[in-house]
Image (cartoon, rainbow, N blue to C red):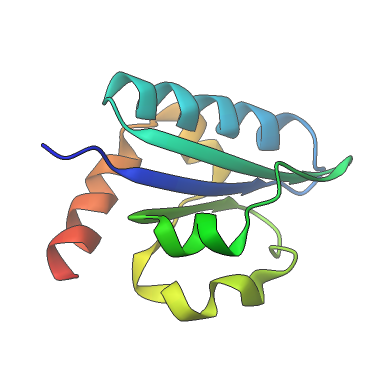
Length: 109
């Protein structure tokens, strides 16, 4: 199987715990599957690891693990077909859900 280039944005209502915990869960599941991942965390500290236009364009899959609105969401307007939405608490509890949802999206591209 090809290596996927995944980018993700995590954000939760308080901007602390679930933002970081879901980012860590995403990194672990991507590493376990041998894929590349870059995670932007939007939280109490502002935006960390800001995703560039190149990151977005090069991504095979984009994960929004958010409970609140994503800042600068317009960056993703041209790649809506590659975005999956999963609440952060779901990513933390069951990170494999990312790959379950990814199969649906990637087969339709």
